[in-house]
Image (cartoon, rainbow, N blue to C red; front, side, top):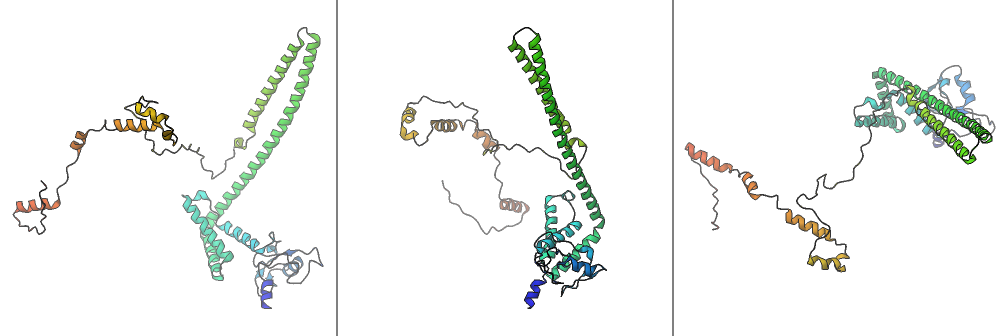
Length: 367
């Protein structure tokens, strides 16, 4: 029995249930029955019970084991079929009204992501947490609201301004689309009238003038095409200048400066080092009796072997040592530093001190 009551009075009860938990009215008998919920406890009840109990003022929830004080203005019809989703959406709206900072308020993307993670953790504690976690989350929410009330109001005002600018931009875009559509209709009508006038002029010229009829007709067609092209170009210029909301003088706050993406170059495994030989020029073919047989032998060429690889490697090995001078490298090479023990012994002998060398290394003369 207790399990049944718990399921019946759970805040996440399905709102599509046809029975009112207060007056036991059934939607089957009363098809116009409407159920309402209150964000304080999310217990559903019919609109008749809401009017009867809460019209005179605040009252306790009539559902057993609830006892929360409810007001009539807090009741509304559930938008979602699942009250869990309805409750989470209301909590997110309530938390979002307090934590209403934007990405532009943070210096780095990491700080912005940490802020979003903190907000999501707070929402999770209120929605799915234990009673202790819910109390701590609600206390944190109240403390943050009290400490940052001025910034919250400022951000709310900025959000309202942005929303108003967005609505104005949408209205201007719709008006621009409407004007372009009307301009296209007027252009088509003007083109139709112009075509009729040109045809009438052509017929008058054919009837009154002397000459080749085909030449007169071709000339009239050229004039018609020229005028239609000029009208089309003029319409495109008008759309570019007046059909876009960018020329309306509106500015949207918070937009970052757009930077053209850098064209991605193909990957270079040598890091930009130029490997073109500077001491020789690699030719397509070299006369060599040893290579003529290999070039015609399918056993060498069938596996994908290329004589150009052989030419390149051979010339590289032949010219690789021309820019190396051993004498200069030896002269510029630094002499090895003396071991610290030698300097210490010499200093001791000069100062007259006695040093006992316990570990003496003896080496055989290799010569």
